[in-house]
Length: 143
Image (cartoon, helix red, strand yellow):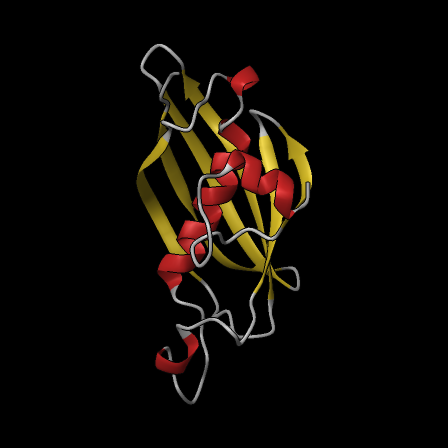
């Protein structure tokens, strides 16, 4: 899935569209996507001037967007009214620096259609090493 297909699904736009390409995709089940972390982002001069590190909150947001790609499909029952309702057990294992390629895997672990709740597990990697992981909760909207 390229950036144009991603933009058709996600409502986010620059500077908050944090998914560049989807490399594996199984609607309603899982997705693996990448974010090229470039020095051009406006957060790097302040986070931090001597050591450009991607803020953890943006890693979590990028992972949530990948989760949105998994669930924001009409055939899955999702709509643009879906939103992330919570995160749990988030751990930051290593810093992500300018020049890294962040590979994010989001997997549906529990779906309660009756209550409109989806629970997902997320992991983000750089060069095969886990840099961030956590559990994500999504409230399912309907159109």
